[in-house]
Length: 279
Ligand code: ZN
Image (cartoon, rainbow, N blue to C red; front, side, top):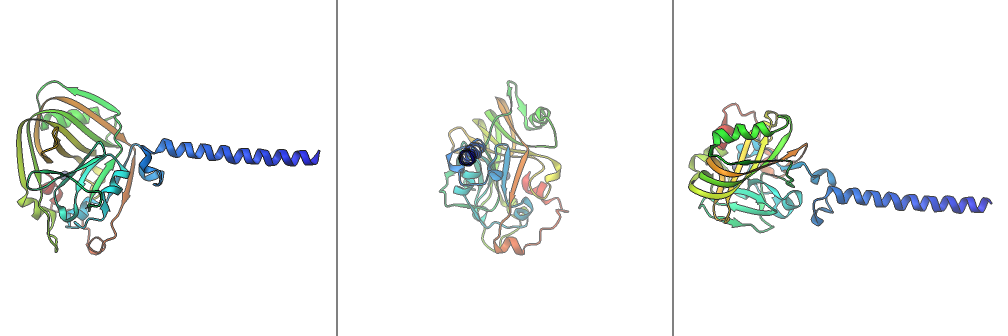
């Protein structure tokens, strides 16, 4: 009788272990958005979590050392924006493909080994969808999208696919060390203007409290439907399209460890340089 009890206990213990294993494995699979994220801890790659490398203040101060590879970024998200090593152009990730819009105006597909000093990506899942059927300027669409946001206290990935009667973007040229401040680089930025173009806006709307870490309000990049042009958006007007918003309640920040980052003083932006560099 005693022997049977022990066997029973052992059996129950084995079943418990097996069941626990199954449950934890299921949880991991549910949290990952694809096969390629299996080795990454779930906190960094959860759906509705924005993964960001470095802080915008470091970019303002001229920390352009690429540190995270595009291969690593693609494990953190399939949608987002940023820049490249030496500030070599504007980055845009859409449907898991990373594009580089260089200062020459051309779009390049990047190698997995290329690196970034600043990027924010997420696995895009549409939570809110709306359509545009009338001509709207940037000044009209921006508040229209804000009206769709359920709260100004969350972070949002924003995607707008449509026909643009006007689009004005910019890109920046690769810099050499010692790196100049971002506000000085953007004084020499290349500006591109398009009329009647089809494409996708990729970016974020973030609350005021991200000041210093990311860009409060909108930070949007653009790529044409044929993937031949785009950049950091300065202005646009849209005639028709679809707005998709991914509401994000998670934010994972990873900081660089390169020498420039570690030794640069990240001061408060009292001169309004972010506004000047981004807009
Ligand atoms: Zn940008």
